[in-house]
Image 1 (tube, rainbow over the protein chains, first blue to last red):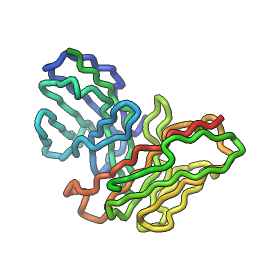
Image 2: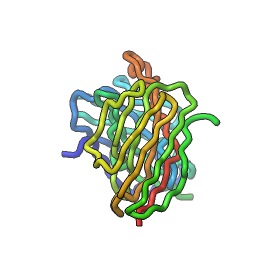
Image 3: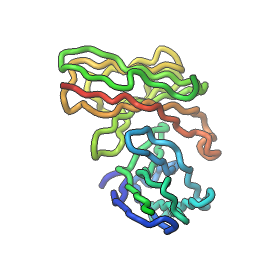
Image 4: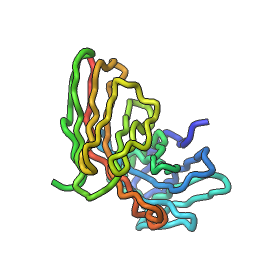
Length: 109
Length: 119
C-alpha cells in the first residue's frame, strides 16, 4: 500500500461550486499533515496544515481523522484561480514529508 | 534574495557529464532537503540535512552526491546520470526543533526547482 494515496482526478467544477478532496495515509505513527498547492511547472506551496480538531482558512476547510487515517480538504465557492494540483502531505519521524501524487482541480467559468 | 533559491533553473547534460545543483536558503532554517519530482509520480524525498548532518538518505543511487557545507547552502552533485534521472529537483528548508510541529511552525519552504534533462 502506498504511503499517501489520493484520487488523481481531474476534478472539473464550475465557478462557485464546492469541491472536496480526500487522502488516506498508511503510517499510523504519522505526526503532521498538510495540504500543499502546486501550480503547473511551479514548486509546491503550503496551503494549510491539518489539525486534529479540523481547521478553516477562508474558503478552505481541512479535517483529519486519525482513526481512519484519512485527511480531507473542502473548497467552498471555487474560484478560477483555485485551479491547481492539491498535494496531500504527511510528515513522519525525521521531519521528512511524504507526498501523495496530487489531485488535479480545474475550475471553469 | 529571500526564501529558497535554486540554480540553475534548467540543466541539460549528457550521461558522462558532471554537474552540480545549488540551493540557498535565506530563512535562517536549520534543515534542508532534496526532493525529486518525476512526471506522474509523487514527490520523492532524496536527502535530509539537519544542522549540516545528513539524517536521511532514501536509497538514492550513488551517482547523486549531496553536500551541505553550512546550514544555508545545499548542493547536489551529479555524475554519470541516466535518462530516467530527468526530473524536477526541488530543494526545501525548514526550522526543525521539538514542539514546532504542534505549533505548525515547521513548514517546509520550497525553491523553484531545477528542471534536469539527461540525454
